[in-house]
Image (cartoon, rainbow, N blue to C red):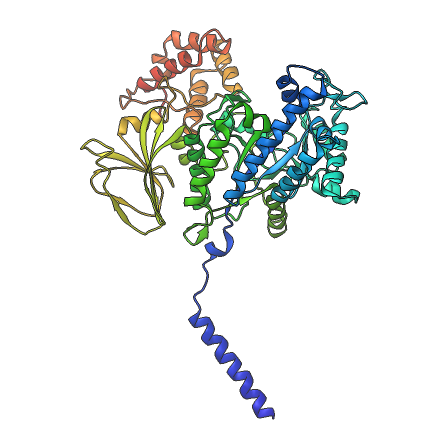
Amino acid sequence: MHVNLEMKFLLCIFFTLTLLLIVPTVSAQESTKDPINIVFEIHSHEDKIIQSAGGSESFEDRRNVFLSNLEHLDLLLDTVDRYDAKLTFLSVGPWAELCLDDSLKDECFPIIRQLYASGEMIGTHSHNYRYLGSFNQWDGDRGDLTGRNNWQYVRFVNLLIENALGVSDESEIKNINLVGGLPKPNEPIPKHQMLKDFGFQMKQGGEEQVFLLYYNHIPYNPYRVGDTSLSEDLDSELLTISQYPIYNSKVRFDAPIDPSLEHQKSMFLQIYLNWRESDEPKVWTYGWGTHVHNLIDEPDTRERIDEMLSWLSEHFIEKKSKGSVIAKYSNYRDVFDQYERWEIENPGVSSFNYPLEYTDYTKYPYNKWINQYLRNTTVVEEIILDKYTKVFLLESNDIPIVLAFSDKSEITLNLTEYFPPRDVSMISLADGLTESVNPESISLGSDAVVLCMPRECQKILEDESGIMLFILPSWIKETAALWAEDEIDNKTFVNAIQYLIKSKIIIIPHSSDHPKTPIDDIFPTWVKSTAGWWAKGFVTDKEFIDALQFLIIKGIIKM
């Protein structure tokens, strides 16, 4: 019997080794790179119901507007369900109160149950209206900065969860009311404390959209919120997920917004390229945000959502790149759970952190080449969009640019239809290196590239005036003022400008004409005067940059 046991043991080892040799191993990339989470959030507004009712305090007038809200939510749910996508919903207090009314709950509760089935939560959004103590009576309290009325919003949403979903346990209700969005208090520290006091585990996205001002996109990773909009505190109890407005918003945090479908596609391609080349096992999200009333006021909103979901589903959802699934539809709950698992596996690792209040590519947490060439683009045409290779014709401020990448080791493209018969610049988005190529025969490797005519490649890095791309930090104005007052010398000022250029904070066309003349012998007084006027706000950024361009042409500032 002892011999038989030994034989069985040896046979077991033999078969195990044989299986290891036969079964192909899974690459590290396949096993560690999670898909991009496509997250769609929608929330209600009480002020829009009041406005749509013509300011009437009549319940009947507001009731009709509310029923229209429900109808359009139902249509949106049908659209989302058609693609097996998910919808995360947050309600304001007055909207929840209307839903609880005996005459409306038969229409509203089924919608709430569908929203919960899709999002696995019902969150709270607040505008800090003051509840006057009787049904349908709320008063705007926009002058209050303390958020003293937020608790009424939380109370009504909790009541909605209890009644519509049949949940009575307080801890379970808090777990469903997972996300809070509180515009007041204004300051982050008291706001975050209030969110925690209410039991929220997540802060609704929105304030992080200030990142658009610096790089024209939102953060790609969820993060534990810090003391400023974009700073991270790994010890914080609150997680936030970024969202980009898909409705017809024009400006957010002083940053221009392009909600077009063509730009939405480009935004996704940018996060896809960052995800594709990243070796860090992070949680990635591409988030949208909209309002219930946008579905009514802007009928094309739902049409754009439908088309975007169709495009994503056809080409990226559950599709693979280099062995990893590219993207999947998720809700806030999915991302929250994934992030908590990631935190346990990566203790002390930053997810996203940008503590600055200006553009600085030395601190930019993503691929700067992708951002510099694609930040202002829209998708014009899908030239090739197959399982392995993707080629797009884009436009950046009316300048044509081709984006191409492939999972094959090498492929040859003919792009003569899109370029004149002369060499074009091909720029690697992995390292920014440029080479001249014949558009008739372009050899494409695994790195993503952009292709454009040489001068137009340079223009893409510039703004419409052809001079400056990004926002200048406030300290450079202080430096310019000191220089204009002769409190610092020419060399100190030049060093400051060279830092901004090398950091890609400003991008200026340069000249190869660099005469070797001592700085103090060549500095014209008008440049110093212009710097002083600019520091005081008397001349525009463009006029100041024109002066800097002159210094580059004269070789005083070296690129």
